[in-house]
Image (cartoon, rainbow over all chains, first blue to last red; front, side):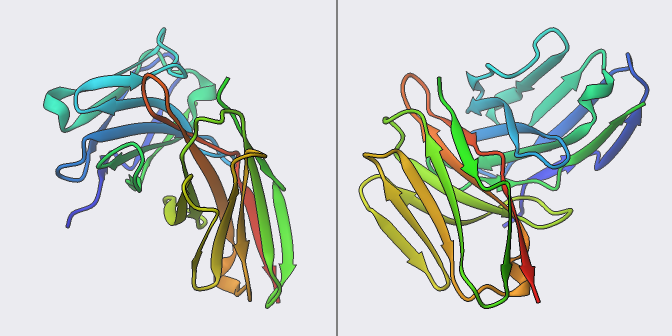
Length: 113
Length: 113
């Protein structure tokens, strides 16, 4: 069974530039999560999808971050414009249901200079 | 609001000794409590989880206990080994209109030779 795929793995951009991350969850997993993990901290949930609907986006900075999950499968997370404090690892995870094991992708390490 | 507190933030134990990490949560409606292990540079992986209808669950050297009245749950690792060195995150699923998972800030566990 293929795991959660993410791309790119690494990205370096200057502040005020835009960036997009892509996630392909495990086939059949209805729940998809995007997390921001700053070095030394726990994953912070940015947005949770159930199929193609948003369950929770209360911690998503909506003035600069956006996410979508087309057709309830792949998802993209965009930052526009980026700030220095956005430097972090962005993790995508998926699970069959919210109360089951989450499978994490390898993450995208974003550096904003 | 929904919150998960995790203690301690750092823990050092002698190889062979036991380690205990504790978490408390803010909402009595939580019914699913997973624990994730994240090794340096790797993605989080589920090591054990517990649901609200049981008070304890074991898997070899790892056990989790849950006290719903006191709203806390703990991870116990016995006979610690060098490969147990990692960051451990507790999490709780908060129900209501939509189920969402909240992670603790993590505990960095060092196993001393």
